Every structure is written in C-alpha cells, then in structure tokens.
Image 1: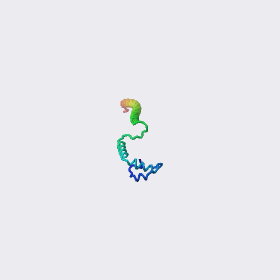
Image 2: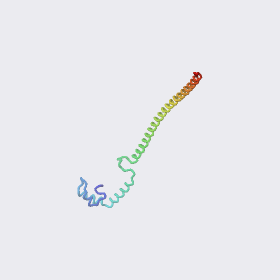
Image 3: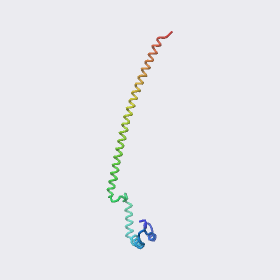
Length: 137
C-alpha cells in the first residue's frame, strides 16, 4: 500500500488516505499493519509474488486459460506466417516461370539472329567470290 509501505509508523500516521477517518487510520496502522502476524504474512506474500512468472493482471480467467490462449495465438500466427510464406513462394515461382519463358524466347530469337548472320556472311562471301571472278582487266 502506498500509504504505509517502506515508511515509518509516524510517516504512515501523517499520510492519511482520503475518505478514511483519522482514528480508524491510526488503529489500522498501529494495530493491523504493525502487528507481527501481518508483517510475517506480508513478507511471505511478497516472496511468493516475486516467484510468479506471470503477473495477475488477467481478470477472472484462470492462468491456465491465459497460457492456453497465448499458445493458441502463437500456433495460429505461425500458421498464418507459413500461409503467407507459401503464397509468396507460389508468386515467386510463377514469376520465375514467366522469366524463364521470356529468357527462352530471347534465346530462340538470338539463335535465329545468329543463323541469319551466318547466312548473310555466307551470301556475302559467295557474292564476293563471284564478283572477283569477273575482273575488269
């Protein structure tokens, strides 16, 4: 409690919360909070609270339900991640096929260009040979 924790009795008595009668506050601080049983219980509870792995800010649900929901969320989000990765992989595969088809088309066109180049060279060498046989001497 912020009105008593780590404070002397005199400081706690001066720090009366709103809405609490002065005499009731004195009794609570002197008789209740200062008692040995209360101090022992407070120390034990603080030690137990420090051992908790999950703070109790979960409302009325049991902790096992919260743990189950966290695991279920993790499982579902993992599945969603896998699904989105599969969709991205499928899209990339389709893009890869498209690029391979375009590359194949370009390779075929390049082969045609090279064939035409060879034909053109052969034709030029044939034309050059026939014109050299008709010399104008």
